[in-house]
Image 1 (spheres, helix red, strand yellow):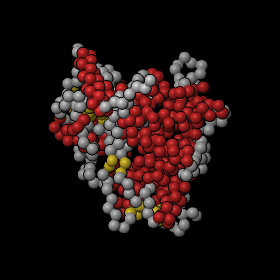
Image 2 (cartoon, helix red, strand yellow; image 1 turned 180 degrees about the vertical axis):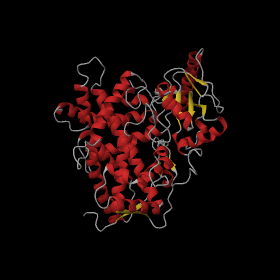
Image 3 (tube, one colour; image 1 turned 90 degrees about the vertical axis):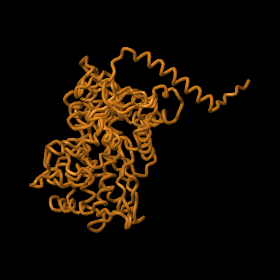
Image 4 (cartoon, helix red, strand yellow; image 1 turned 120 degrees about the vertical axis):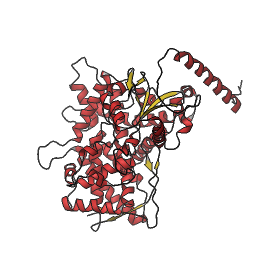
Length: 513
């Protein structure tokens, strides 16, 4: 017998309306007697909330709302109340002073895809187990990203991997220019940075044309794009039961990435030798086996090791590759700044390969990097936070499990902190002695702050420094004659610039030397 399974558009619409009505009814019953957020904010539509008001760049919309409602205000994204936090003082209150009160993650549908909600970055549960998880991951990362001062020539594994990959990138840039005249640099940048992460996590690098490597880089990119898109199931929970691509795509991409990483981690579990720690994965296994094996303290199981490597892998090259993609755009937009950086490199380093320790003798270069972080603000928000208990903020009551958005872009463009914030000027970070103003550097928000601050900030800063200084030591970057460059970002978890072309010409003869 054959059954007709055809579903008409009218049936889909009717089913959806019934589902929404049932959910609203259940939600209304459940909200009786529950403490509510009491904050100023814009009027919102039923069901949709303020979703239609956000525009293409929500962080700019929130800056406009701040003018009317103040540093903290309430919006509704779908049916979820969200407290938006602006202003350095309020951000410090949330992330530092009362950090424990705001250290949770909201129970979003998208977050549940990542290691079934147990990912270090996206875990909803904040407590002793999470703190131990973070400590183990931090120690493993530190093991391979810090140099041991045994001799003047000693460097860390991370530094060696970065130097190797940026040397390859110089050759790729020069080759692409000689063959094509100009090129779009994003793919080459992403492959180089991804290789650093692969070497650090798995002790392995890939050729830029390797099919497996390119596939996993694309999968990670697809995952980030899918996660960056507004997932209706995050804010209108009844949508999570609908078989729609926009809702379930992040899970599919995450599972594909997880399979790649799980394969490498399981291989490490099989070949692990406590006397020969090869990379971060071995370091995680070693820490779990040795330090906590004889205690009753909870530690990471194999699945959690996989999810930790997954966190480090994904975050490890997205922030750095996005920053470099912006950096090369700014360098060809402001060639006079590029010349100043090259003059500082020539004067203080010469032709020797740049090292992490050279950051302290290249203050203008450091100022430039911090101005990229501030001006581009390519990570406009922290990952959403959530209150872990009933609390107050600026005199307003905020109940437990309230979703919190931190507008880092606003802080980075706050006129009370930055003189003429729309102007791109690395000099703002230098004092009268042309030294780096570290107190001003601390006001730049890109990695977050406090309990949930990005673990890889030091790694990212060191890596970005080596890529920029090595590229500019050996190459002149130029825009195509007559090209108009656009610094308007494309919104996402990490905002990218619009595609652009550049030329890379060797400064001192052939780049192969």
